[in-house]
Length: 117
Length: 115
Image (cartoon, chains in turn purple, yellow):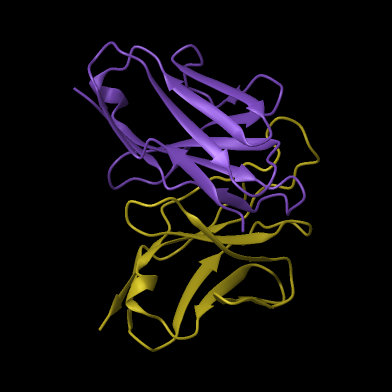
């Protein structure tokens, strides 16, 4: 149980285009999902907290107009990187918190590797 | 989150126990210790968490000192597949709000299991 999927696993896009990444909780409901970014040889950095039915909460320094987050259902959150640039190339990882589980027990997706050319 | 200190790297022989330490001297009475790991190029994986009693599950054991200022994650019989970065996290206890459930990942400990 407690499986989180991400799609796509890899994406290459041209500079200036937008890319959407999906995060799904497959066997549980997640009122809260989190989006992280990880650069090579660095730790995960939380970008935003996504709550079902409400606006996402972004961490300091993360541009909300560039990284659009939508959490329209209890099993799906999406991250759209708008007008992507090469510096947005990174490993994007989502996680979901089981609504009925422990507060800080999160289940992570396999990640999406974004390359912007 | 409460500050945690972990060694940057550790080695372990396959089949032996891997003991990963974590210091969290500023932990508050109602804050839990969580452990996650990240295998290369994958999303992190929850391992275990505890408050003050020792905990064990199918993956690992967690030993928390009586004063709760440090803990040790034990992988009883390490395999090559356990090679990963291990993160010890002590989330600040929050009653709710938009930051509820947030995790802050530090640099963790790179555990390398050798044949």
